[in-house]
Image (cartoon, rainbow, N blue to C red; front, side):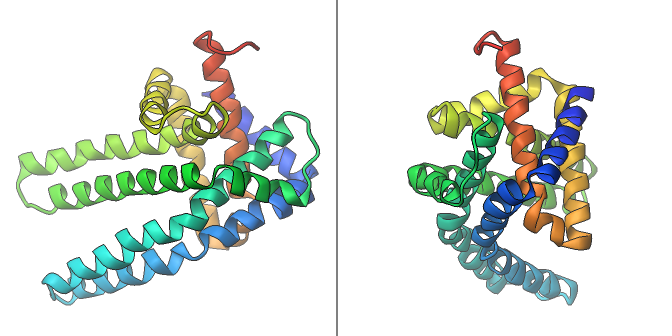
Length: 244
């Protein structure tokens, strides 16, 4: 667990000392590519929650969720997925000791466009499914069924932990999407302490980002990408699949 926090501190220091390369040429462009997803997901979600609070129920809520969130994520993922690939490409160049130029983000964006879009959309749809399952089971009013909702929190935590390995496995090692998700889950489950530490770091990063916004724009994403790359390399070395 301490290694993950050490990676996080190292990543923060890297961003601090190389702000222009990592924050401006990487994180800021990533934020531009994911920004269209905020209204796509946030506006219909807020509308559905408002309807639920005033007691309105019916097909309108389902249609809003399906069209604007599910379909909208698929469309918005055409920027967000490749944008995340560009972010990880920049982070990997930095880890490898290469200089990061302005064009490098867009090289990563273009070179893995379809693969990164598909990975992003499937990954987010899995999250949607887990969240819907949690809401459904905990809202039944039946104690035994509600217990399944509590159990689904475990799978939500596993989803967060698996993000540490997902993009490095998909983009650097070019595994099939099935093997990417399977191996990311295996790596997360094989090191529960590290997985828990990564979940804590992600939670803290999201809280700070919601309070200040600015860290999400220039720091958080690239810092987590650097941590993910270091964690993935470390776990593959432990499994004997990569040389130190």
